[in-house]
Image 1 (cartoon, one colour):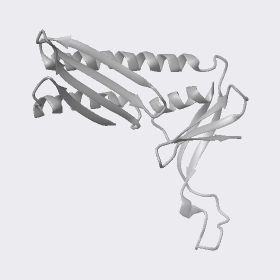
Image 2: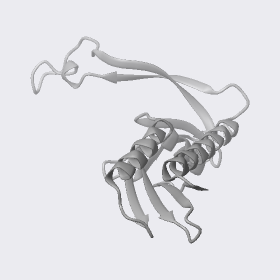
Image 3: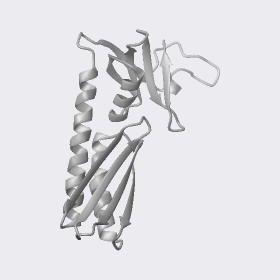
Image 4: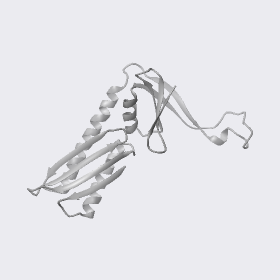
Length: 184
């Protein structure tokens, strides 16, 4: 998560900037690393301290929180709390999207690449070594819902059953930061 702090109609302060960055970075536990945060700290004509926080994601999710108070630190705390509530509300909506009937469950194994070959050319006859194994639930989602859900889950891939064509699909994050979709 990248955090940019901007000061408007006020002098910049390193402790205030560090405080804002620290508070906003705590939201990372709810978000995927593909999010960007912009914090604007300003003072209005009545000498009230204003903190505005905008969170942007690659999938199009934009969340904003803005608060006014007599103390800039309080404004930052209140704005972060507001954004946190919005993120939690958004996550609840994603949970509501899931299909109500029993979901499909599959087992996903990650194998060690060196366990397939003895040398560079000889294929092993034994079973490959499993590094990681987990049960994966295939939820009934549209592609847009799957991408939104993927942003909030911190995993390598998100398998799902596509509502639009009833096919098994997988959303994953590509090296260039874009999303990939595989359909079977």
